[in-house]
Length: 385
Image (tube, rainbow, N blue to C red; front, top):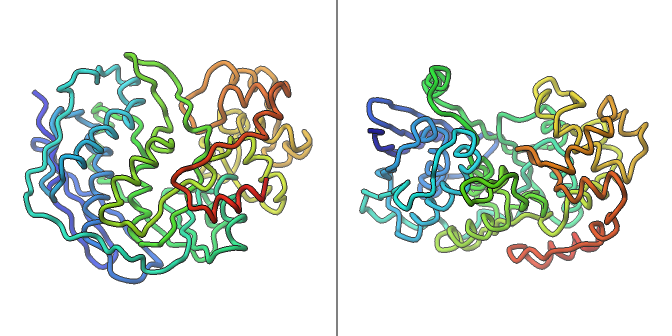
């Protein structure tokens, strides 16, 4: 019998947030620390961030019951978290061979009847918060918005050294996992991918900037594999579906904060074309997962191969070698036209177009409106194409 998982409580000490979870005899404390941020933090936003962070610990057990004791959730809010658990943990279910399709697979209950105060409906400023991850996408967002808005970068650790080179005066956020969780993972407890971008979305609410412009692209809507009749998407919490659900979730208590992906209308190839026009960042950005902390490119992982493919239509082979340090073989590049690994990379159709040129112009002239994006941001992006 798997014991239920409980989100017990949260606390705030200055700008250090602590979240307490349990399952049976196991107890965990997760911390999130904000630096370079002034002002009082909203308790309701903190409570909801704790809900997003719980998946890092719930995944150890895959409990069929989650009890929310730290605060109150409405029935609609519970539906949001249930959907995120089922879809956002899809890769975890697939890799651990877990059947998640039964109607009673997961039950979420809220046992705290104390109604929370609404989060502050007025943002503390009119700046645009731009998350920086060290790759080309957030660079494009940053460079296109800087001439039009007062932009404040935000960086969430662990991150790449490239992030600090790109961002000026960023808000710094440090996520500190409970060492006991890491110990249990080494002992053979379950592990796997979590909806990390959903965690980031709730982190980005905390500073209460009016606009939160993330850099998730249209390509993230494509799934990776089919499992038990469901599409498994490594990037589920980057999709338009999640973005729309998230906005509906927060609108009742943070209406004047607008969360949207600035690059949602574009495919990765279109973003790469925009990036190819900003050569000052060629030596700065990094997208390799294997050599992330070494601040270099390995040249052979799916992210490196994808980056080379994306830049291939716009830069010379010599320029790509100067950036990545090597040039992938045609076999390595062709593999991405056949299957999509569990990485944040281009679609299969984009890989084919970049490699052969077939369908390239159609992709480069494509546009898909983002219904969550304010009109003034849409105008800026369209003008850049």
